[in-house]
Image 1: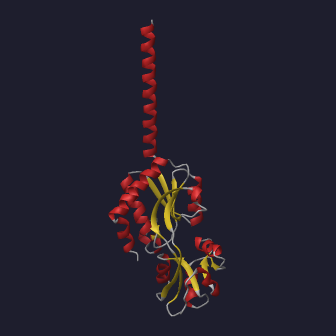
Image 2: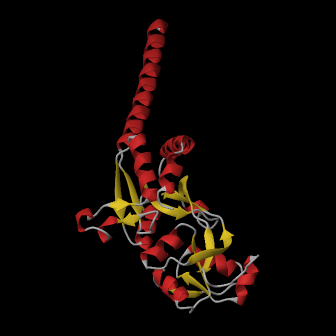
Image 3: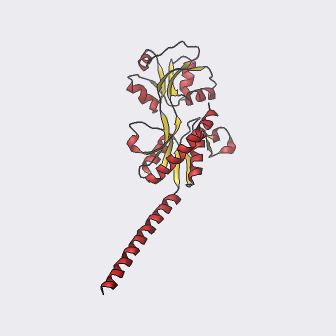
Length: 256
C-alpha cells in the first residue's frame, strides 16, 4: 500500500511539473506569436510619411529611425504592424494598449515611469539656430533671454526652455519658425540638431547655423508598461548588436 501511494504521489508530482512546463512553453510561444504594434508620427528625417513625396508610396513610412526599427524587428522575428498617426494619437496608443510602442520618443524624467524603453535609436540634441548672417553669440542658456526664441507648441523644446526660465513664441507647425527666422520675426529657433536643418531645407532655407546646444537627448521606442520584459530585453539586446556593427551610424550618415 505504501509503495502504491509513493508511486501515485511521484506520478502526480511529475504530472504537475509537466503541466507547468507545458504552460510556460505555451505562454512563451504566445508572446512570440503576439504581434507588436508600433506607432509613429511624421517627424523627418527620423520618421517620414512617404506619401507626402510620392503618390505611389501611400501608407509607407521611411526615415532614419524607421529604417533602424524595421531592421530591429526583422532580426527579432517578432511579427509587427507599423502605423503613422498624429503624435498625440500615436503616444496615447502606447500608453493605453499592451504590446504597443511609439517612436521616436524622447526619454525624459517625466516620461520615465510611463513606459518600458527600447533604445536609444537616435540622438536628438536640442539646438538654438539662427540665420547664418546673424551675429548672435551664446555661451550659456541664460543668454537666450536677450533674444526672441521660436518653438513648436507642445514639443519637448518648450519644456526645456521653460525649465531655463525662458519664454518662447509658439507656433502650431514647426516650419513656421523657419519662415519667421528667415524674415527676422524671431532671433532664435530651438529645434532638433538633425530635424532643424532638414525642415529648413524642405522650406527653401539653407542659410542656417547652430548657435548653442541647449540639451543633449536621445530617442527611444516607448512601449506600453504591460509589455512583457522578455520582449523589451530581447529587442534591446538586438539593438545593441546593431549599434556595435555600425548599422545605426551608417543609416544616420545618409540623412545628415
